[in-house]
Image 1 (cartoon, rainbow, N blue to C red):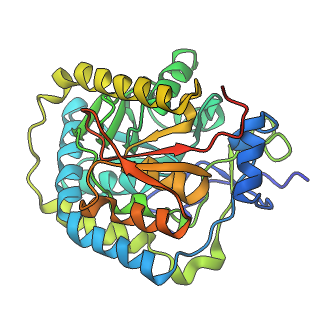
Image 2: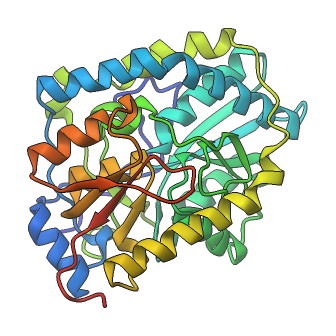
Length: 364
């Protein structure tokens, strides 16, 4: 059943922090096992269905808080560095931060706050991008009617293997609104971002959690039963988890530190991108061969992407560079809880963890 088209909203964030260009809908969740079978069999694209989300238990939440305490200052420094790079690209202009829902949303909030703290005009939207389906063109049109598309930069938290970066470039190559596919991220181990604060695959605390650190909003949904012509891509909201929501607390912790941090130069990132891409591709070829598959979507490189795989997919195994690394402690916790084998990640690359999705026999 179709629902009424909803106006832009801010989730559980302050309305000044973000405008979600998504359409809230009611949609029954699909179990993780059913979802995996539907995706791998080709019966459904991953964007057509959504897995259930729950509030993590206290032991997992303690790992989030430990990560925030351990790496919060580093994230704040990287946000300050990224904000300075964005401001330098369009001096004197309004900056339109377009975060990619939903992992990019907390980072977009932090960037917009940091830019404003330094006297820059900044708007912030969060929009849908879906692998193999592109960017939400209704959202692009909405922004183009209110801002100069040349002032926009697309923001995500990190790169995994570059699938979303490639999707962004392909989608905007044919978009009629004049946006350029400039992608800014905090961490770019894949060498796929145009602007990045670091290439290090480190643990960004918001990457441990789902909706309760992203405005009580799900990942985006593109299902023809819910999204019609003129609609934004859809999402589910989780007001029932308001008591556990950490969205505002996360940005309220990092934003003052980012506003006070001194931006650092990152002149070497552009020169390193080619090498990072080569390292990523070499690792992917090796892991695809070892897994006996041609399906790149089964390989989830990077701490954050591995986390998402363990939270909402059916992993075959987890690979970690160093079992004593505090930044992969939550992955080992999740693997133990779900009896997922853990092996050592060998080779040379920036990545500290990789998850391999279990094959159901449809990808070889």
